[in-house]
Length: 199
Image 1 (spheres, rainbow, N blue to C red):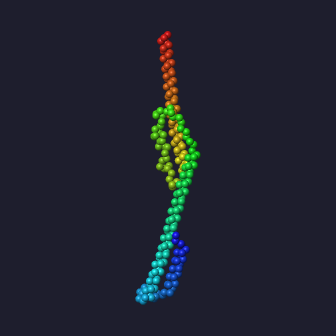
Image 2 (tube, rainbow, N blue to C red):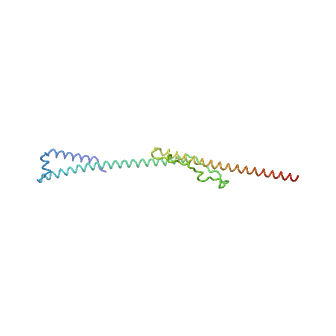
Image 3 (tube, one colour):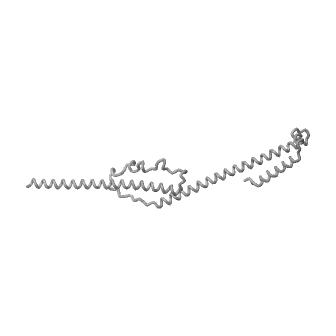
C-alpha cells in the first residue's frame, strides 16, 4: 500500500523547490524562458514544465489514493455488517426453533379421506403475511425479532389447522353416535311391532 507520509513529503519538497525557483525568476526572466532562445533558457523552461507536471501528478496520485482507500473501507464495513447480520439472523432462528413446543401428531388412523382438510382450508390467505406486513430491511428489525415474528406466525397457523382437524373429528363422532342411536331406536321399534303382531 502507498505510504501517505512519503507522498506528502515528496509533494512538500516539490512545492518548496518550485517556490525557490520562482523566487529567482523575474518577470523578464519568465518571458525569456517562455520564448527560450539559448540552451540555458530552454533548460530552465523544460525544468519548469517538468516540475509542474510532477506537482500535478503527485496531487492526482494522492487524490486517487484517498478516494480508493475510502471506497475500500466502505465496502469492507458493509461486508462485515452484512456478515454479522447474517450470523445474528441464523443464531436467532436456531434459538427460536429450539424454544418452540413440539406439536404432537394425533392418532389419525380412524380418519377417512374426508376428515382431512384441503390445502386451501389448512392454509388460507389470512395465514400468510401480506405485502405490507412482510419484513424489509428498512423496518430496522433485528434478526431475532424477525425470527420471533415468523415463528409466532407458524405456530398460529399450525394451531388453527389442528383446531380445524379436531372439530372435524368431533363432528364425525357425533354423527356416528346419532346414527347408532337411530339404529337402536329403529331396532326396538321393530321388536315392539313384532311382539304386537304375535299377540
